Amino acid sequence: MGPLQAARLYALKSLWSATGLRSAGRALVNALGSPDEGVRTVAGMFLVQAGKQAEPLIEEAIHRRQNLPAALLVAGDIGAFRLEPELRRLTADADPDVARAAKDGLRILSAQQATGSNQRG
Image 1: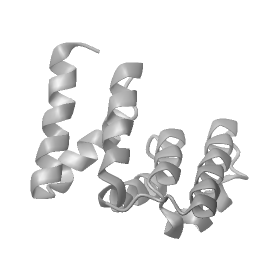
Image 2 (image 1 turned 180 degrees about the vertical axis):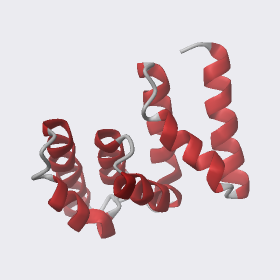
Image 3 (image 1 turned 30 degrees about the vertical axis):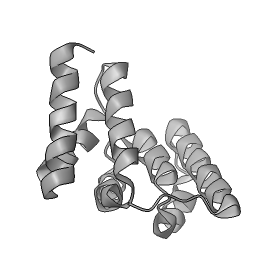
Image 4 (image 1 turned 120 degrees about the horizontal axis):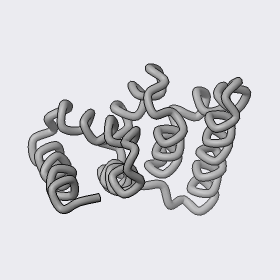
């Protein structure tokens, strides 16, 4: 990931955090599908840092099957407990990467519930 890509992601995060502009948040969700692993990682970290603010965008991505494995992991990381039924359904997905990510997302949610450490955005 180059410095311009990093700056763009940071600008999107800042704009979304400061104004709630959904298109900036959606651009971070879109970045989860980047061919560049660094871009995917930073976008995921920014979404997780946003916590509950990211939940509607992650829910939207899951319903659209957009960047599904990454979106399912972010759902777990942000403590999106209301998306648990959707994650459970996707554990039986025909795509093994999706099914594995759904199981991992559920494990993360379960661990957060057990420790009471779910993030609040």
